[in-house]
Image (cartoon, one colour):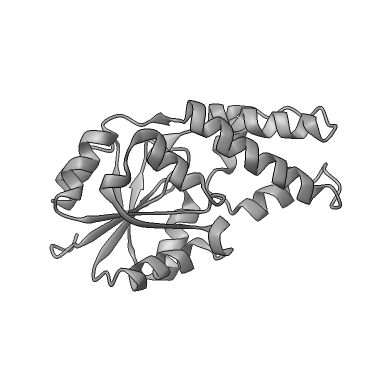
Length: 209
């Protein structure tokens, strides 16, 4: 790793927390509200975590007629924010103390393919606003992850960031954005020959420092 690291950009789902148990309730209640009896599981959520929301709706919710999809997305968006604000998601081990340590030496950021408001809910629920300088997501601007990574870099004048994520989509986005990548092997995704990886979140202290 380069020694002059100035910043760390994080993925959210599968890297910082697991909100699949809460999110699946929002999905299933939204599906039921528009008249369908399709039941997703938390494993389903973890399997498509990291994809752009538009791709998730197109590939995994094709049982919903196109004319009903906008209503479903609107219903789900409201339920997701409501449910997460009340029950949140489960942090992976050592997240709070590791973020506190890292924030003393590096600027911290989040770039996710989530819906608008999702990152804010995460930060508010766990009181993490104090650790993060900026964040961006697909739901805000419909840009793919590699472009949002570049946007964060440009907006904050970063010189040498690294991205921490758990899926092959994260790695591919980093390759496109020419940003170093650290694979969170404890997360949802599986990556063959990822290069640098961590088995626990706290390992970042050793790797980056």
